[in-house]
Length: 463
Image (cartoon, rainbow, N blue to C red):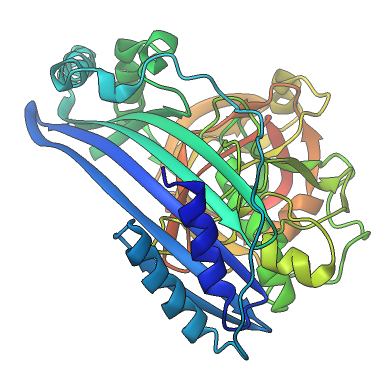
């Protein structure tokens, strides 16, 4: 992307006024998006964004500058600006010997999306729209989205690191609206992998559309959700977002350092049911949050955060790890070259248990089965949360019965971890997501097996 001599000179400039650490992050991103709304192509876009972010650290101060000018002069100017912002000291010259490092790629892309005609991508949307509407006259609206993204990055720093990565992601989603006696109900399905256009050899577009339409039509028969404290069974892949938001953020080292986490200072303590092992894994092949290196050049890793209920470690980026005298865990991520990296999750999941999922349902006299959670709100300092249930059913006499609507799950993430008394053997990753933190969004994945929480507050409207 840029000659190593230029990178080396840029780091030298950044360190010249007394910097203790300097880093150059270069990014070249290409993307395509298409939206079919109500049978019409509403958006068909493509773009490219290139630039570099340079940070210089002096003591506890970080200077940062970014530029879209990738010439030697442009990079030098940004390096000088970052060094000045870090308020460095006495001057001098420092030469850094860069050593190229490599890390295994979590996926092998077979068909680059940029090599596929836009007409082929739009044709996918039309097929999905037709398949969804064929499920019944109740389907009144269909929106289909396609997106792909190729992100090439290069990271070099004053420790001598030089590494690069080529990240490709392809995404597809469909939302359906059904009309009936209970008003309008929605159903959604989405897929996303760190693969190329071969994503559509793995998944059948028509099947995905039918699933979304079925969810919307099924909810037309839904009864109002109950309310109160009761057992809640969360289906495979359906609860990952809850543990990402209500527990995962509390295990990020920056929030721990600020004492803004209920997990701060609790390493080695029993913080969850002995059934619970919680992992963050950036190496999961083809999963949405996977990569070869993080945005600080550190290879992605599989990090066990909670083992058999005991808190074993937090997630780390370079600067927090450096202060603690330990290596980063490969969790330094940023939205783009215009942003500073921070501690972020990758693919966060709860490992398998040994229970048969059918036995978990059969062992629950009355409660709620949640197949899919929707959007919610979380206080990351306390873990308190409210999540909508986008697909859920009553459990009556040990059986899944009526679909329910207009319900929320209300609780506290760390408390939920202690109340899991049954854990299935059917682990599955959930849908691809974008994690927002301090104004930055990055792609993440999550997953769980089927699990039962002994008591959780359901906020419903049933009398």
